[in-house]
Image (cartoon, rainbow, N blue to C red):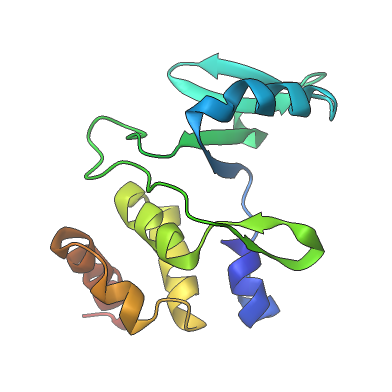
Length: 152
């Protein structure tokens, strides 16, 4: 989210304490192995899969792994979208497509996700095509966020 917003307006981008990373579950062994070489270790704690600093493991500052095609929480309206071909951001960072990111934020729908939706909307990342591709329940959530932002 940060990189997409920053590409449109660097001053609108916000940092968060943690990072969410959408991955395919089948890639988990390779991800854990690659992370180990960077000083990170894979942990599954309280139902959450994450990569944490091996020397000072803290869930709050970890990289939380979200599995494509699976629900993060049983109560989620939809699973995390399947991953399409990623775009390459500045510095060669692979980024999930904006349409998938919007969908993930509207599924999770925590306060921070609503804030991210506002940020993405404010820089024009939520296009009419992305909005039209959302199921009704997620389109309703998008409108709720917009209404709250307008003060309706």
